[in-house]
Length: 350
Ligand code: SF4
Ligand code: SF4
Image 1: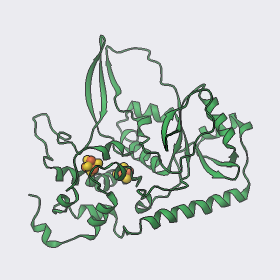
Image 2: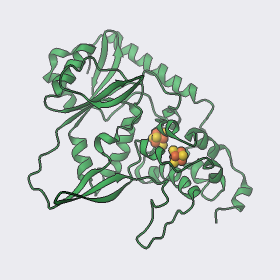
Image 3: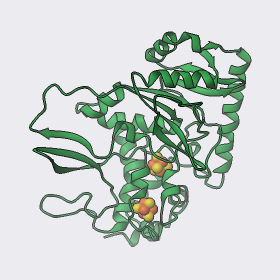
Image 4: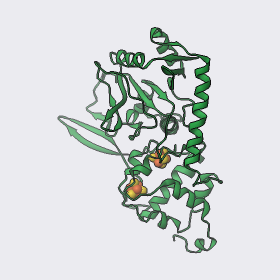
């Protein structure tokens, strides 16, 4: 059921929730919006992020430097405070679906990820604008959430439409019924129009990268061609693309002392680093940068969909904005699709 809420009532809801939850929401920082923890008092109206925030929201569930083990063990540790996350967009939620596949939905369940997912209430929102780098349309995705949220906000006259996406969301609305109103049917129709319009805009801005073949085909056909040297020519191995990517989830173990205790931490890792796949004997299977560059694409667009049924890219465009080498993933994917020179195979990478 779709309801309505004013910006003041939404701020009141967020402020009330800070009593029982850690509330994360967009905050204005100069001319940008960043994700920040909401102070309990004087929050004011929440700024609306028209598209995804610059940082990946994976940090909410998968913090860099999270404690994976502690010695000596501490019994009776208190459970983390429940959280509320405002400002998630469709591409952020697709990334959560990717990480759920790896960290929750099979025989090995990452306890930290599962606990954080369980205890985080997601208040998502439609995109009402797009960054130049956004390309969810190229992956067949839409710029508004279709699942994995508890509440979803869509701007409407006088405030927002609120759609519930879970029992938890329904309970939240029921517990704060005084803050919500009935939504006018015309507002729901206008929401459909606004959504279609924005989806068309994202498609239009990416028209110069027409997609004819599935990316799995475009990338895998270059298994053994030299195109990767050309695509990676300006890569400086800064790892920024992996750090900002909401679907990247590789981590390495790092042990530290903390007083009398020893902690094992999980630090975010990057497949662009020379040591990423190094084995105990010192052997590394991807010594050359071009091989690591190729692996990045093969993992996201070939191996991940084959293993998990979903592409490990949400088209959020963060890697495009962050790249020190000005490498545009859309251009790379377009070249991978359109370039096929049979003679290149003769010059295989070994
Ligand atoms: S690969 Fe780039 S566009 Fe795709 S999800 Fe990661 S950061 Fe976003
Ligand atoms: S952000 Fe760009 S330069 Fe840095 S590792 Fe990724 S592709 Fe290379």
